Length: 264
Image 1 (tube, rainbow, N blue to C red):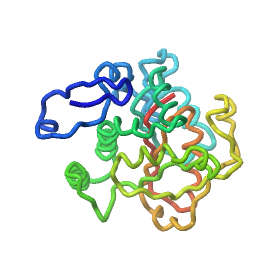
Image 2: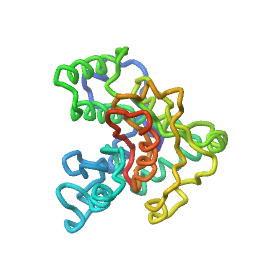
Image 3: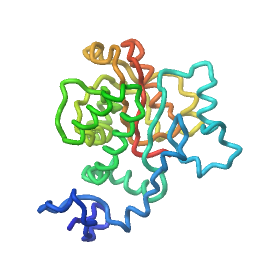
Image 4: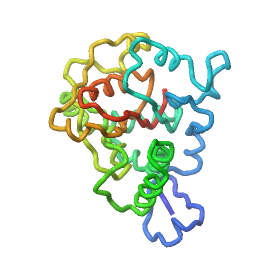
């Protein structure tokens, strides 16, 4: 039996091998709450930003890509970020959850997404440029919960400014990154005066020029020649993630992709 993290109702897990020998209560979301979350189908998502293409008219889609991403891809400053993976559409119910998670200190809400975040991470590995043997090795050890000296991706959560971190007490991107149970590298720093992206309109985000992020030189060697996976909570226009990826350019990573809980 489990307690729903959102509505506090008691619910039973379906009887499967994973829960058969579990004697302790587990945390998660009940079926009634899960059905309110709109998971993005992998085969119907934008190949670059991960948004749900079923929510767009056909005129806004070209070659499996939304027009927003086409503009980024064909623009003069395409940038280092290659692709984003997103789990859920940012609907009204998810907005309520994220508001409680980010602004009201309910950090435990993230724990309910752990199985599906880890599932998405496995998909990232499967779709990577690793050899089949490397993929099989990483997936096997990851499934077993064993730690590697080597990692398929360098996990880098997007930072908050020190002021914002002090106000909130935690970084929501770090909390989400910790769900992967892999080593986390805090390779990016954020300036104090960049302003909150959530307070900016879509046009203002897209026209952002000044980069609030910078590489922490202590982690240059950890990024050099590596595949980097940026972690953030919400993908809106992609500006924040692209600026974060740009901050890593000086360290010459091999690839940079990102994973977000939501696509707004």
